[in-house]
Image 1 (cartoon, rainbow, N blue to C red):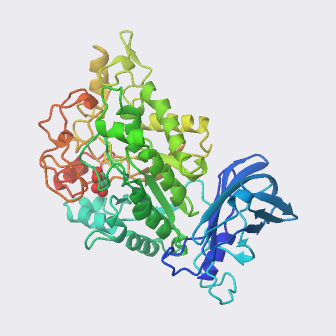
Image 2 (spheres, helix red, strand yellow):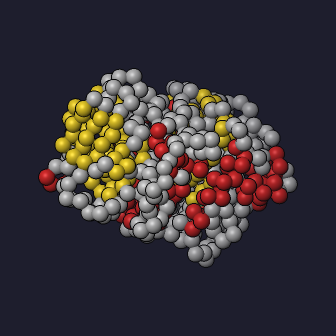
Image 3 (cartoon, helix red, strand yellow):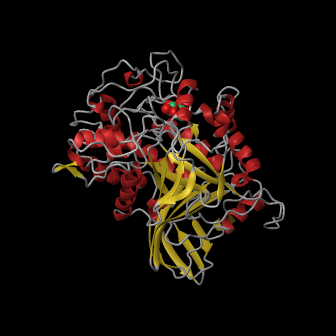
Length: 575
Ligand code: BGC
């Protein structure tokens, strides 16, 4: 096992323009005294520009307490340290020595110290292969034996992140979802599609009841992978005070339980993902659906505010949780973090669009995360917004009245997910996210096919007849989100379908409910949201419209056969 950790570190190098991280997989059992790793060094390139970079280093001492310390590493390239902070840093040839300042000289057993520096480089900015603390090699088990270096039995050494993890790779088929889909009449047509694995509670890491846990899925993914490349899609979904504007997907953690989120949920997931055994998988993580957008649109003084979203904004736990997740999950070089960016029918208005992008940046730079921890963003997760409305555009007008003024569009800047995703991508790059940012669009249930799909634009009687007669999205209101009547499967999952888009994905597994249509007691923290009740007449978030939900739905996440059948029937493209 020494070997694999060294191989992991040695093989790390930077993709140009993408910040990188070197960190040994923390041995499981850290903190129990079982670990023989004497020290860990987390070296993270936080920012990189032409010819220069800045890095943050965190050293954790697992040995005896110290009154002074020095960390050393060597560069393979021509990196030259120019300036440090919280350390006295110097360089001789390729070797760098970072020693304590007087004020951070003591380092307890289990204690950590962080410092940073700026440096110049040219060519590639490969990460250092090894670190020592006071002469002792860190990040590897110091248990004695001599390590012969990478050998033929080691798992494949992980490389740098590829630009698009979906390109040239097959997708992981979740056997549990696949079996349910295949058991439905007609379901075999889609049962081999890759869908998201939702880690929607702490117990999902080990597996709920007899269900598969995270390692079970990753082990199965290795089997499905064979000799080629494979991506597996995980949904990180367990923030404190989850789902603050709704009730159907409230979770197990209370609004203040950020420490539990970090310790019991993110840390164990990050440790599993960093296991060298899984280094050959491309692991896509979509981080915390709906949370940050709620802090923009559903807080005071908006008429759509909810008390719970006000609480989450005030306590900062969504921002902290997302930042922490990005930072920790981003430590594994084969993990690709995609942050949730709502959908056009939520954030497409000018008042929401820019502030959301700014909030995403804030979260992506919280709790030690950097924009380099964000590979991309996902839109339309578990929602129903159409991919592309072909029968009208945002620039059309009818009798001199612009489409933006129609009741359906209601001054939104976008009419569909593709235009929204591409615009959001540009906005995010403009405020400092990586120029290679990739977007995902969840097309699991936005097909809107079947007999109700308009074949042509609506009549030009007025702007509303034109838009309503032509739109594919048949919802009563864009703000409706629960088990929508009339929806169909959308575009099949596919890589690089359009400019700036890494993939169309099925992150929400088709056939799983969005929420129960009546109150159902449960031990998951899930409430009853009347947006899932077909008799509900709405609230300010859907302009007091009917909910449009299917009747007789089970709890969110549970199998909903009638919905699955409807999705098959209304699939577009047709099956
Ligand atoms: C539910 C989760 C479920 C997910 C996927 C969410 O709405 O809250 O429990 O895993 O949907 O179906």
